[in-house]
Image 1 (cartoon, rainbow, N blue to C red):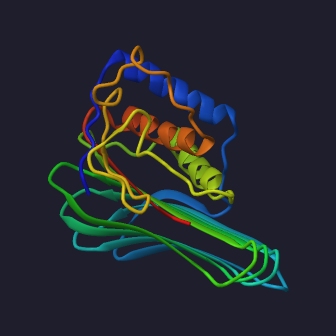
Image 2: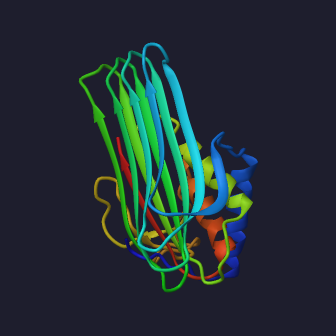
Length: 267
């Protein structure tokens, strides 16, 4: 995935603080299954699976895990959500923070949702943050996929957000970032009647054309060729505000360096 470089300016710092304050004031989610212990692990799957049925027509599964990945191991974050009955609802929310101190690892992030009942809604959101030290590397992939049968009024949405952060100072993620990451997954997993459109971060200019709602971008304080004096600010959705706040806070946590953001969505 492409590297998105953040330039340190006082304006960006002020904007970051405003984004984070606004997101936190809106209320932060706290997943019932959350472990921020940073324990060392080999191959690790962080999975949520929500399956709504006639017997249980509203299901939410949420999990957050932070851990240290050994060299040569694989990290997989997966959110799966299925609604197989009329008017049932399912939501799967995965947040995984992977610390890579040395060596080479692989990191895969997947969100998948399907709906098969009249008026059924299914949403899956997987957020994976890979925090790597200088000299460490991560081979990453990020995918979102949905499936729908011929059902009246059903909807399925999947969003996968993968963030790779360079960690030059050996820091760990802050409690504020933990809340913002969980809130991002919670906000984005709320079903909507239209397709979601997320930029990698506020004011990002795309490095390549979007394809199937998948974007990569070079993050600057403002879009290339556009300043706040040239054009009116675009409306910022709650989804976008939540993602912008995460990126802003991660920048505060880990200092100047690179942050790579990839957003994949379907549905």
